[in-house]
Length: 240
View 1 (cartoon, one colour):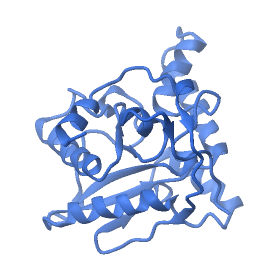
View 2 (tube, one colour; view 1 turned 45 degrees about the vertical axis):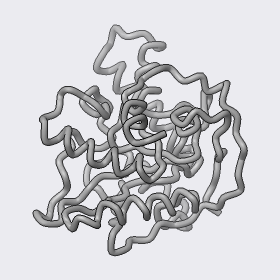
View 3 (cartoon, helix red, strand yellow; view 1 turned 135 degrees about the horizontal axis):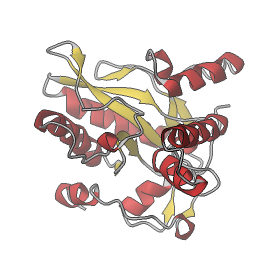
View 4 (cartoon, helix red, strand yellow; view 1 turned 30 degrees about the vertical axis):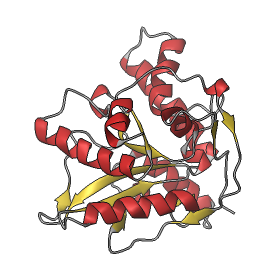
């Protein structure tokens, strides 16, 4: 699949039959990601006002061994490749915000997004609220959540020359249409910024997710669907 085909694939929002995707359960270990000259590491728990970050902070208070961002080692190799590609121009650096996610946080996020939707749409049925929540947070009862498998990352870009985060038109973890990868609600420049990030990640072998411009995966069920594979590489994982 060349980059043109990958970009076209990234526009698809078709419903994925996760029951049709197997899992190879490769034993690739979780490793901690360290900041480098080309890769910045800014965890969500260090971002002021990030709700997901607050959940991580609470979890880490009870689990001090959870001392950083973890991903599968083969994903890290591709992440470092993408970071080197971005940094080559001297204009940007790749920023990593999240990787592995404990299942407990995953379930809490799903319920919180569901309840927020019902609060804003009091006439919505439970089914409609759940469908909305599942668009932004994977339901462990339906599929293998990519982050819980250590197979997904949340990333952005940093503008080195102007010393500021790149503008993508919405904040990360904003559960609204404007967060959709190819949203028409963003400006031309914001769309170009999204395309730059998208092409960089696709060229490194990641799969994109249509509803979140910041979310990319390697080895999970969405990656398997994106690249037409019968099985994902990784199942659930815990930081030991």
